[in-house]
Amino acid sequence: IIDDGADLIVTAHKNYPQFFEEGGCVIACQEETTTGIHRFESMDKAGALKSVLYAVNDASCKNQFDNELGTGQGIVAAIYGMHVLFAGKTVVVAGFGHCSSGMALRARGLGARVIVTEVDPVQALKAAFTGYEVGKMNEVIGKADMIFTATGCNNIVFSENIPKLKEGVILANLGHFDVEIVAKDLYAAAGDKVRTIRPNVEELILPNGNKVYLLAAGRLANLALSEGHPAEVMDMSFGLQSLMAEYITKNRANLQNKSGMFKVPEEINNDVAYTKLAAMGITIDKLTEEQYRYTHDFEEGT
Image 1 (cartoon, rainbow, N blue to C red):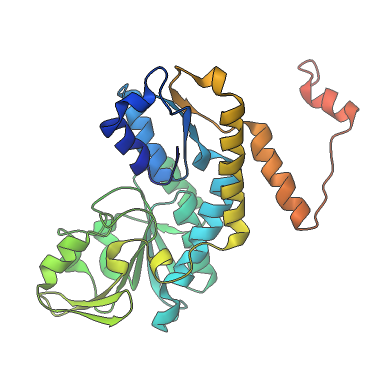
Image 2 (spheres, rainbow, N blue to C red):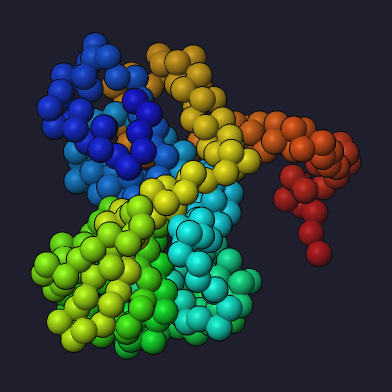
């Protein structure tokens, strides 16, 4: 089963458990997204994951390109039709993983003042050392001209901090469902003061009179308002999925009656990278036999 967000595989586990029993039709599963991987890690810890699950999202040819570059550029695609200038704006980016760090980089490159919010101390430290201001969402939300979320978590912009939103703020989720920017809380706050001002862009008037602009009803703005991630990065993600499907088929005998999370084999990740380089007309060096021996000999050192 090839999945994007874990919904298909989780549903199969719940409704068709026989698929994962001995003699069942499922050999193994593959997951495309960070959010999906988090769900499967929880399933695995709980003993509920009944098949082998390959974390395609965790392969570097996926998360360093599709996530960082594709989602990063997605902030531009999401508000392209809003006729808004990034330069001089305060942009709050929720999270500093692969997706959100790419978003922060693109916003800063376009002249915005970027503030990052995080719950992971290491990622927060990384954001600070990269030169971003780092703070708590409830403390910085009122400064934001734009808020972009890509956390894979819920309640980032929700009932408790919605009253702090400033006039004219643009709200865009690029990472998960409509629970990061909690759409139902925004609609509840605005009541009947909601109008569509252009496709997939709603103006909501809050009780304090401030107008805020919600993209794609809190769902994936870069997909709803644009064409999604460019083919130049999606080909690598789909290449990994395709080669993993072939790998699973060829190794089905070794995967039967097993379960748990597994990484994409390094040779498959490298195969995708070499293929992409070739398509771009790029050649790179290879280790000589002597260099290979040196880098793999534990007796060599400083």
